Image 1 (cartoon, rainbow, N blue to C red):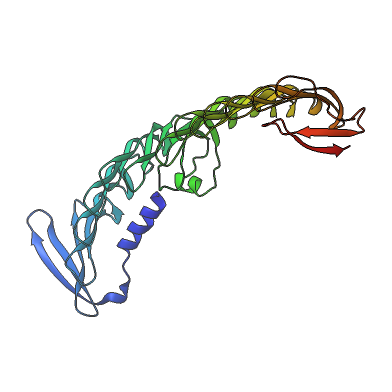
Image 2: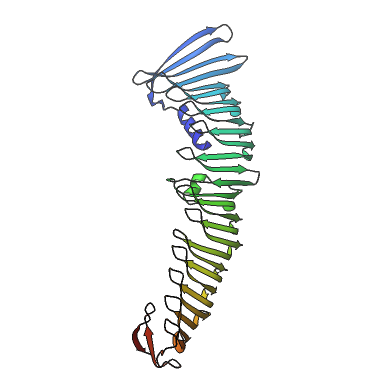
Length: 407
């Protein structure tokens, strides 16, 4: 930022001599300083654009150099020198006459307090240069609306402590950074119709990376501290914590109604356990994951809130009893699993009455152990035995015969 400002100011001071076609020299007498030489320089179209005043006092040469914007009477810069070196306050101006900067110089170098301004005359920055022409003490920078965006303490050109802020075009705070001697801890946030939708804390070590560079994807820092992610309407979407760029502790994800979808526990960037939930109008699914695999009980729901399915996972596979229900809450099937493989199934009529019990082998019906009609009386189920034979199928709603299939 400072290099750009310096180059701009240098360019303002060194105007091409191609404009200078003639000069006019005069001498006036001053009761204090004696002879003052005045040189006025005009460009090729006759417009006055530069005036230099020189005089000697106490064996020293003093010079004031004014440069004007081409073709106007608006001053571009005022340069003061003693014995050829800049001394005192140096001024630069915008074309509208507003002060661009006022910087004090001693023995040819920036030294002491300085101020720079926006073109709308709002203060842009103020600070102090030490004898090495480096920032020292308090430095404050403002945006064109007058909001401060940096309040920093410098020590010989280096930030020691302070706070910086950044705002989007609407004036919303999108970044706040706190400095110490070794770290820069930043909180970022963004808003609907902005280029991101997250808010988090980041830790910059040693090298300070420009925020806009970070936002373009070159993020050369480590995430550290609380993190939040939001939907476009500002509703919280996700929250958790980073420690030294690793996901740690409890992370929770929400839907737009604020209901928990996931509640996961991490250690050293590794998922340990996670409670998963799904919603439509109401809760539709919940389960637990451990070390990245579904483990333990799970339940899914219909939109009316009734249970659709419940059971247990073991390493992403059904294990134990898994029960399925219809929308009215009546049980449909009850299946026993071992590491994802079906062992035994109870099948029910839609009125909740048990219809048949079937054992399985290699995922295929093996034996029908029991078979009942809708009134609970035993009926024939076919000749299936040890995986071979026929299987009589009945309508689970009416109980009427449907067909006979051969296995």
